[in-house]
Amino acid sequence: MPPRHPRETLSGMQLPLTASGVFRRTPIERSDQRVSWERTDRAFFASGACHILAWACREAYPERSIELAAMFLAGEEHPLHVYACWDGWAFDSSGWHPEADLLKVNADFEGRPVRRVEVSVELAEFCRAHIHRMPHQYWQDPRPRASAYVSQFPPPWAA
Image (cartoon, rainbow, N blue to C red; front, side, top):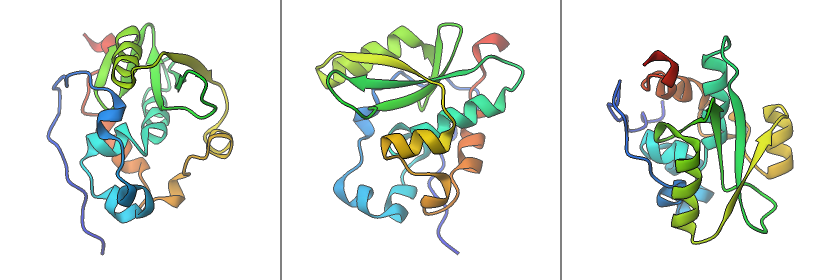
């Protein structure tokens, strides 16, 4: 049995908003799925599995109009980051924050403008188009881990 990934205890806590690039994968984390899997939840879902987390957030709240968005650096054809959004709020590895703040913190970190693009396709099509891994291509299925991570952050409508 593979080792368990590191868990952070976050239940109900608000994390500071952090650019996804802070957690950018190293060359070994990009080439070895087990090494990538063994990162903390926050690092794993900030870089390498953000799209899995975004879809898990939407699936966690089927009664809400959760949308998905991709953040692109100016001039790039593949997204820098993928996140879920609802009514001006964004959910990613930092939890729920105003979407404008998420875009700004990432643009500031990258030193380049970012643009938001709505994601209106299903996961498989998104992964094909943007060279992202499907759940079966990870060391283990990341969907249960993503669902557990989503559940640690109270959504903005619960306030």
